[in-house]
Length: 106
Image: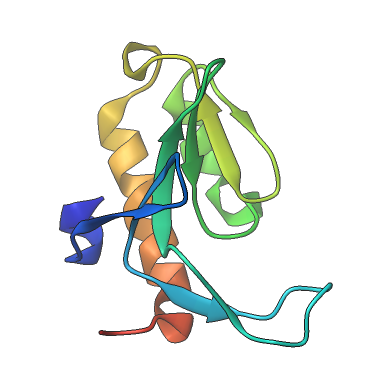
């Protein structure tokens, strides 16, 4: 993730490791908020990766990834050994490129 963003790891709260940042406005707040451009969290049940919103454009890569689950903007895997790391790297790079227009450079 560091290679994809060119940014160092940064803690976002007690359990999310993020790289880079972008600004967005969510539905419950009119104020712009910052969030990691990309990140991950080693949760109890899964390794959660925070990618760009939506996986529709990534369907061909997800088919090649291996065992995983998705939600709106999260990719869940049990173990790195369950997935093709090369495909995972491509997903990370695509997500970073997709979020580039909203990126905040420090």
